[in-house]
Length: 221
Image (cartoon, rainbow, N blue to C red):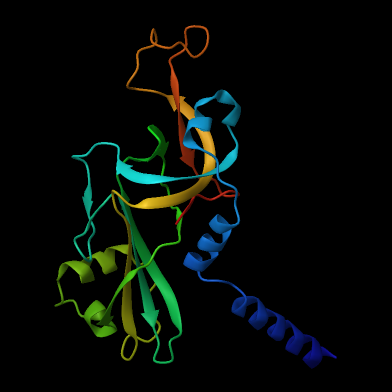
């Protein structure tokens, strides 16, 4: 019976891996079936702690504060670069990733909500570059992408002689219309004084912020 049990365990494991959707497809599917609310509805205190989805235009909180994506140089408010060891048969193993962000908001109908983009799950297209894994292992290679890969990768490649290094860049750019799902909380509004539009007994006015948690990750697509 032991071989049969082992076979069943392996089969179930393979089925589980095969059934796991890629992140972009999974995020798009989840956002498509989630009911959206208006950003204006988040201005009241009743939304505090709720998981909500909104749709609007992505805008830098400060128009002068943007990033240049490390692979393509595109102007953005958030980027993620993943580094995968890519086998000849298309199998891959993530070695590491790098992320960067600046404050940004989602705007619609004259209202805005701030976003805390800490490791969001993305339903966006990625730009792919492929390099030889030998470049990664060769200390003489010092170009920017390889240096970034070495700094970001926490795992070493299993087969550096014949595998490839796949570099995929995902960005969120200003002016893009996106759907976002996250946990709505409130934070003090630094643009207002405590005497303006009192929130509670003398407390500083607040503004809504969307972020993610371990149980309810931030989804953007």
